[in-house]
Length: 188
Image 1 (cartoon, rainbow, N blue to C red):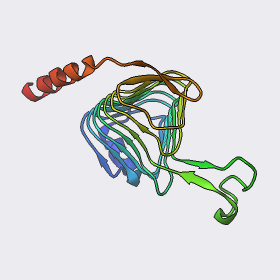
Image 2 (cartoon, rainbow, N blue to C red):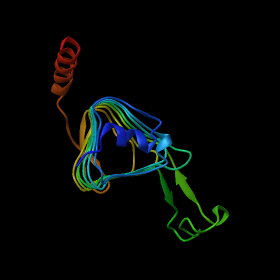
Image 3 (tube, helix red, strand yellow):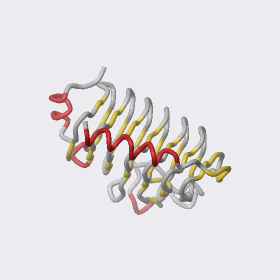
Image 4 (cartoon, rainbow, N blue to C red):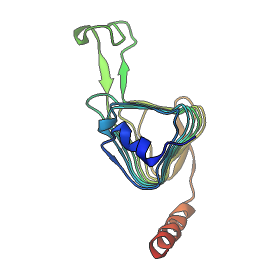
């Protein structure tokens, strides 16, 4: 079930556009730092935390996590989307053993990597994939299911694997469809 406009307003987002659908089972931490554009849908069991900017025509599928740190941003540009159980994570502890880990430890004993994540227009992240701190997904790029994205990607490519690598070029027909859709919306 999706929240009513009144219930969405009560959450206290930084801003919310029109035609926004948010599941009543989604969870938001620090919603005052989250901006939501027009035509956005956030499904069941999603968790969004801290600094997040969702542009227009965005879909975040069931069970996805967008976890931003205090000094980083997750930005999803127009027509981008996340498939089921996708994670975007802007902060990570150092696991090599030279430092302690977890948020109960004082920062002076930890080494945290933090970096913003940006999904440019027409990006898709496949089911179960993870995008790590400091990654920018190039315009039109698709990430295959169960991939781990450790580095920024080139535009209009298909990436897959652990770690994710380019495997093919992606067609640009969606750009023509974008023009048609926006023309229809503009002209009613």
